[in-house]
Length: 463
Ligand SMILES: Cc1cc2nc3c(=O)[nH]c(=O)nc-3n(C[C@H](O)[C@H](O)[C@H](O)COP(=O)(O)OP(=O)(O)OC[C@H]3O[C@@H](n4cnc5c(N)ncnc54)[C@H](O)[C@@H]3O)c2cc1C
Image 1: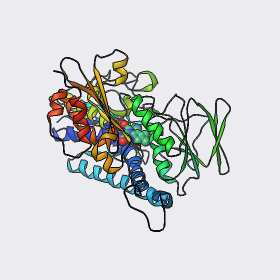
Image 2: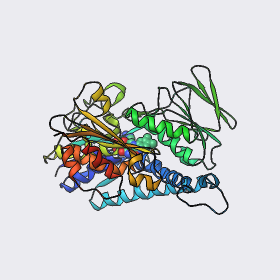
Image 3: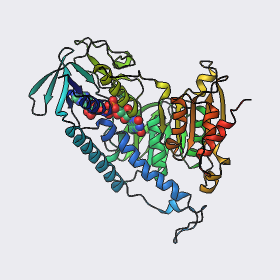
């Protein structure tokens, strides 16, 4: 029987375990922290659960426009509603634990062997697991998958204390609502937390080293988000590089390189991630690392060592749970001789869970502007959409990127509430190489936000 050993039980690891087990392999998963990995226990699932509460607050804040007033208040309802952060955090942690347990049960049903311990390679075909009691177990393998993920980056000048200076993994342990919060880092993670806590009614300052928030995203989308966040009262310090974060009693001081100091009660550090690739025996097994310590892989997840695959954040290919899972599935399909389509990053849809959300797929306007691909771009604001008007939605747009000549849709952006759901028809069009006319020809519900996607596609029609 084919023996597969997986190191790391996050989406990269557990999804590949399912594929390998279903194909009849004997599968072992070695994991330190609990199944689901950071994705389930500290990153995606907790942050999106917190954001579910913040979304409710956003909806409540718009209630008076839709004719709903709370009896004891006038005007903006959300200002008079208090969030019980300790209950929110309790719910977040419970949901994460339950989901991890669900994944464990699912893997056990597929007869996957789960080993709680720290794994490392002993050559390309053997994994040694150091168990909690210090003992070691060895597992021979026909194929090994490394899916050890990544951890929050910290700096010697900004050391988290788990109480007031926090990484994104530590925020769910705070029980009191922060009086004033500084979020350092305006990438996806920083923007999501800043947006979420702002919606919970907290005074938030976002420190961004670049010109604008979300420097890696569509510029129009980032512009809409920044405008909305400022309108809701967030202070955004752009072109501001953090030098240090220190704490004295209850006061946290964020010092910027220009000498400015920002005081707050709490600070969240969102400075990116570093891969968990040290002490894994990778070099000795012939697995080459790239810059930054990421494991180098090709599009079917092979490393430089025969029989050793890698998936997920430890490869730094695209740090998303969905990509980790796909890389893992592809690795197993390749190893087990199943039909396999190499990873295509131009088909990945992703979402920034701010308010409004920003969802993207495929080629970007930035690539079009830089001449990397010839394409036409249309952008349609959501403010003209009848459903948006009914729901009081003013901010957001649909953007489609389309090849001239063939009319094939190669990319898109949706900014608005639930953009993560609305991007799906665009992702199908990109994934299946549909033309703008084909997308425009599909019925949409009237009235619906998806009507704007069809309308944008109609604007790309050429006779
Ligand atoms: C705040 C935040 C929010 C996010 N939200 C989203 C989102 O909404 N959608 C999305 O698609 N992505 C999201 N991501 C990204 C997503 O969390 C990662 O891309 C995903 O977790 C990667 O999965 P993975 O399997 O590579 O690693 P992980 O989920 O990190 O799992 C790796 C596992 O390996 C274990 N491990 C490490 N070393 C060893 C070892 N030596 N032996 C055994 N086990 C080991 C770890 O303990 C961990 O359990 C978010 C990230 C952050 C930081």
